[in-house]
Length: 118
Image (cartoon, rainbow, N blue to C red; front, side, top):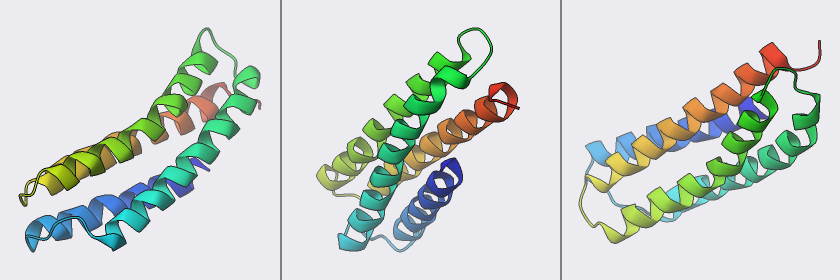
C-alpha cells in the first residue's frame, strides 16, 4: 500500500511542479489527484493499525502508526493553503507537502521491511 501512496503523491508533486512552471492555480484535476492520495492514505492508516502489533523493535510499531495517522492531515492542509494563496508559489507548498508525505510513507515501508514479520 505504501508503494501506491508514494506513486500517487509523486504524481501530485510532479503535477504541482508543472503547475508552478506554467503559473497555474489549483483546479479540479489537482483536487482529484489529492482525493486519490487522501483515500490511499486512509487505507494506509487502517493497514498500519492492523499491522502495528506485528512490528518488532522498541517503539517501531508506534512510530509506524504515528506516521500513518499524521499523513492524512498533510494533503488537505497544503491544498487548502494553495487554494487560499492565489499566487504561483502556492504550488511550492503543494510540492513540499507531497515530498513530506512521500518521505514519511517511505519511512513506514522501511519500518515494515526491517521490523515487520519475517
